[in-house]
Image (cartoon, rainbow, N blue to C red; front, side, top):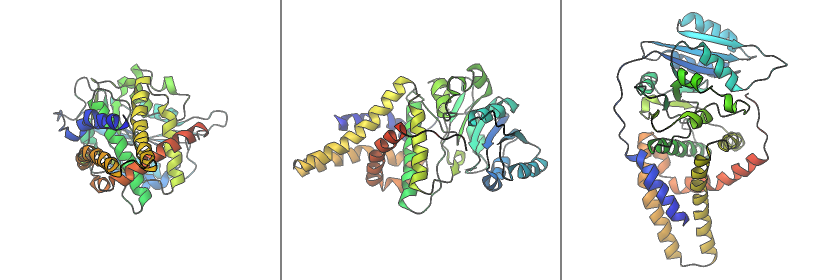
Amino acid sequence: MAFMIRAGYYLMIYLRFALYKGKSVSHETQPVSVIVCARNEVNNLRKYLHTVLEQAYPSFEVIVVNDCSWDESGVFLDEMEKKYAHLKVVTIQEQEKYRHAKKFALTLGIKAAKNDILLFTDADCMPAGKNWLTDMQYHFTKGTEIVLGYGPYRKEKGFLNKMIRFDAFLIAVQYFSFALAGMPYMGVGRNMAYRKSLFFRTKGFARHYHLLSGDDDLFVNENADAKNTRIEFQPDSFTYSDPKKTFGEWSRQKIRHIGTGKHYKSKHQLLLFINSFSGLLFFFSLIALLVLHFDWRIILSLYAIKILIEFPILYLSSKKLQETDLVWLFPVLEFFNVILQPVFFFSNLVTKQKPWK
């Protein structure tokens, strides 16, 4: 049963992205507002902000929300504002009686934007090239209100780096594929865009403002549908960011994301749970059969069929997302990925969320 469910997800959903050629897009340029929230991110701003400001695009502004920083962010942003006329800095001062999460900072940035098309990324992200903005905005044709992009992590040495990148790759294949199946359910704040008019028409983050996370995926989950959402996966449209350096840092990030997932629409929660549980059940079933001394040739054949179904789909997807080095380690990376998901899930049940840093 677990094998059939897993195969069904790959052949009926993930295959959509693997074979997707992309829809025709408008080549008209529309004014865009790029929004970046930063709290004590002066080092990242020094490294990456210029790559956002120097996009090859005729009409755009960059809004950086300096959210209660106590490092040198303010000084650096003042200098950059003098150098770049299209940079606008919104500064939030710390107030002892009022603590806020990232959603408050984002809301102020959105209110300050003068354009309807809003493109979001993080302070530690760097666009893959000067056409990032162009590629993302091309999709805003009539009826399009949300565009989902890809935010991979940089390649570094070590198995943990491969695990983190593989996890991000699988998540992207999943949300791209679900969007193509008419069921968009999430996006990542490292690289996504939507209309300012959509934000205010749907009352922004009002329904989940009390949650510390979810400014990206919950907004998409509540407002995306088959007609108003498109995806972008050209290599120039990626935004690269630094991966976590330790397993502890990564696990805390994963636990926070899983905690947000329980607020998705019920149908999305069910579909994602069945997908994750079927993978876990499949591996546990294989282990149980081995312990019970079941015919190893049948077990091996079952696993080989699974690989033959999944590998070509992931390989084609990895070529689109520039992650082909990960696919050759797919059996090992998938096993650890599947085993760790329940660990993160149960850890979330006993972990209290930390505020926006």
